[in-house]
Image 1 (cartoon, helix red, strand yellow):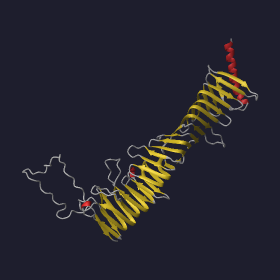
Image 2 (cartoon, one colour):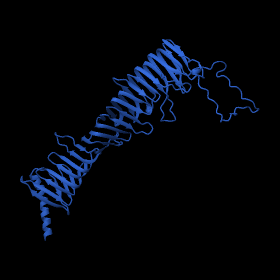
Image 3 (tube, one colour):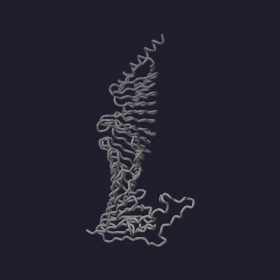
Image 4 (cartoon, rainbow, N blue to C red):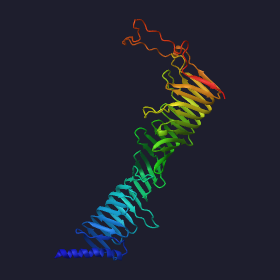
Length: 478
């Protein structure tokens, strides 16, 4: 007898709950009864009701198109609050959220979820973390939905290209995040962004998906993850600009440093141009001097323009009090002096033939200094028994220095005002040490004649007389 009466009383309470809610002006949400549902209601001093539901609960708010599911629920009429516990599932037509606990404040359309939060936004982006606060849109007051979270949540941002095709996602991890609508994302505190082609770190980040811009603040760092041509970029601030969902420019401002396998750039500002996800050009400028360095060469100027199709350096244009310095590349002599070239503008041309080893840096083939040019180069001496270089010094309007695999091969001066090629002293102190034969090494008889006797004596290089110089200095006037 007690069981039918209990069911009747429970049914009466389930019917009374929505009616009481409507009478007190609350959000119109209806609890759906199931065979396992248990419900208890308490009338408050204001005439509203506090409702407690267990054994599995389903709540539907038809006017707001909200569905709520959980193991149990508490509804507080005075606060206009729903508190759901255990396996919570919150759903809107374009938004879903799972969590252990959830508070829904109907007065200000606020959803606070805690414990294993997993939310999916209308554009497909996802937030996973210990907690999250979701603010539903309110006309005039809050036109777009907003979401915030702390304790280092992870956001997986989903984007599409200009044709609507899905692009590789980007994961954002930070101490706290805030999203305004589908396109604006703010992140702060040890921000880490990971995409298929790079990893970025910063203290804070702002992303505007509609304008296709992203700003990284306070000592940001970007590392390219390509296997063959990795690169890094650091600065005080880094801005990224895209067009049609393709990255086009990356600008590092303030103590900027860009490093690749070929070259390292230092400047106040570095502007990288990207095409089809490959670095094509780098421009460096600022109040302080810009520099480009490789293991053997360096360039210094007011501004630099590095042309690097397919992310391999082909040309560097150094403008404004340009200065180039390099280590002498020769095994024929020894010196501690550096080669250098000066001019208002210096253009460096690199080897255009693709190397078999794609990881190796291209070599400089030609250096051109324009206006107020001067040069100092160590060159191989004519006397091949000497280990001290010859010195080539020149001043002119335009100086062109060409290189071969052994080092400087030619220095050509136009509009020359002064030129000098000084051969080293032929004293014994400048001669290369003669290697003593190894007593344990057997004599080489490979060149012996079949009929016996010594091999023929070698002929002088280039015929009779002195060998041809390893490099020449040409002068011409215009």
